[in-house]
Structures are given as C-alpha cells and as structure tokens.
Image (cartoon, rainbow, N blue to C red; front, side, top):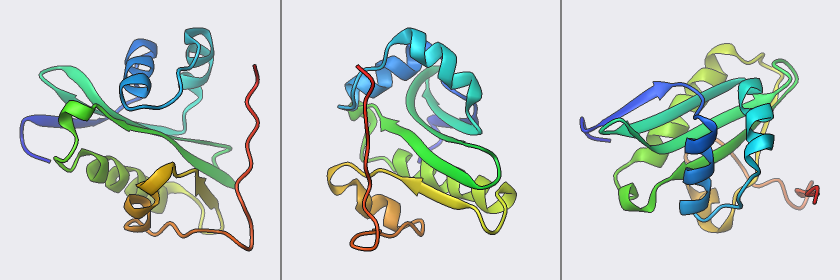
Length: 137
C-alpha cells in the first residue's frame, strides 16, 4: 500500500459501508440494518484515498469467545495495490494483540478470496466443519 492511501482504525459510515459492499460485488445491506450493526463492531479499519473510503474491514463478535471477520471490501478501481492485504494485516494484528488465546476467529471466504485469508493464518475447515448461513428476508 503506497503513501497515497491512509489506513485508519475506524468503522465505515453507513454510506461508505453500503457503497463499498456494492461496488466490490457483495450483497447490498439495508441502511437501517447498517445503522444498527456498524456501531457494534469490535474493530474496524477504513482505507481512504483523497479522503474517500476505498477499502474496509471489520470484526464482529462477543469480545471473548468468538470473532468473525466481515466486510472485507476494496473498490475495484483501487484493487491490486495491496489494500486487502493491509486491511487483513491490521485486523489480524488487532486480534493477536487483544483477543483471548482461546478465541475462535472465523470468516466466510467468497470465491478465491480464501487465498488471501490463508496468508494470515486462516485455514479451510471442511470436511471437519462447513459454513452455513441464513439470510433474513
């Protein structure tokens, strides 16, 4: 990540979160849901370029037993510059520093994204366990 980018410990705004999720190819979330959820983040990082959010990542969880890495997104116009790696490095550093040693940290990797996460110590869980999800709609 070059000097044109600023990575800061922060949770994205509702508007930033919604915009980055959609342009990164992730599902849209209702602004009302984001307004409720974002303040409950355990940790967050935002990458800015010229003051505009171009990347983000968050950790949610109970603060002791379980943590989940979510919302890793980089604006496609800024991909290939190490922003995803910088976001993950900041998140993993925070987890190593502040999460209890016995904490379970999980994430759901879409497509080939598991290759990025593997660089930071995440391992595929199948066949011992598989991810499952339910969307409220």
